[in-house]
Amino acid sequence: MKKIFLNDDDSSLQQRNRALYDSDYGCYVEEYFQELLTFERRRSERSGRPFLVMTLDFTGILNAESRRESVMWAMKTLSVLTRDTDIKGWYKNSEILGVIFTEMNSLETETLQKKIHESLSVRLSEEQLDDIQLSFHRFPKDGKPNKPGGPVNFTFYPEYPKKERSHKNALKIKRVLDVIGAIVGILIYSPLFIIIPLCIKLTSRGPVLFRQERVGQYGKTFIFLKFRSMYVDNDENVHKKYVEDLIAGKVSGETEDNGGQKVYKIVNDKRVTPLGNILRKTSLDELPQFYNVLRGEMSLVGPRPPIPYELEKYDPWHRRRVLEVKPGITGLWQVTGRSSTTFDEMVRIDLHYATNWSLWSDVKILLKTTWIVVAGKGAY
Image (tube, rainbow, N blue to C red):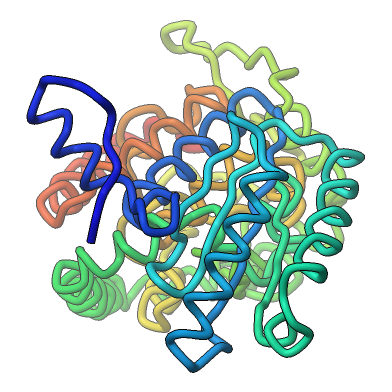
């Protein structure tokens, strides 16, 4: 296949350009296009400036020659309609073309969609058009699920499925360790699974277990379990308002008596029972989550799963913490910052864990968690 490259005497640069550019169709190859897409998404996450991705799926055209002809006509049309700053490439090699339209507002998006539809209708036959799936995806609007539990648009996250495939064996081992660890944990703490429910029943009315909808990996919701530490029928809006302010950076943090360290969590919460204070301080209220681990909804180590109303307040870059890895009972945040960090700092810690995750890092976090729980540091 003939490749086009920049006119440069440096042979390594020439080779790189050959590898990145498909001159037959005048677009970038799949791997590089997806790298550029990921870079553009991350830039948009920080800047808030939206961009548009258009995909043309040609897999419906089974005849190879007809598909090639359709792709060539589509590229000629796009060469007229796209700007110099727009990026064309294979989203999926030889099957799905992609175009990244940088910094597009909603009005420009609507105008562009109309122009592309009209131009393709002129250049391609009705039969070809019927076999091409044309899709538009706007980030950040389309970069987050409309609601927790809804489908995640992976168009903007091509690196995640690829990352899972590359860590396939390690993730299988992690799952085995999760199951073994959860079973061992239940056996070791089995007396407490009897004692704590009895104490809860004797000290306050209501159920033993607190069940709450949480958001797991890829936005999938599940029922999160804890031993109940609050009075029943308490006002959820207290926590909801606090979380909203915390995410927005409006919480300055309360100062601990010991050491003057700031705490970014509701302290002296009147909704918590006397027994609940003990359970929280010792983290014993978290024990039922071993069952969430056995069901595959959580891992022993990972970011804490958010409540749906928390997710609704997330900035686009915050949402990566519920995409990259499965939530956990403990995690890097718990053993480094816990309640003494701001929300943004917590997310950065979670993303650092996801980026640098390994089985050995999980082991180290689990060992550190034991000391943190004994010390009761950051628990409220």
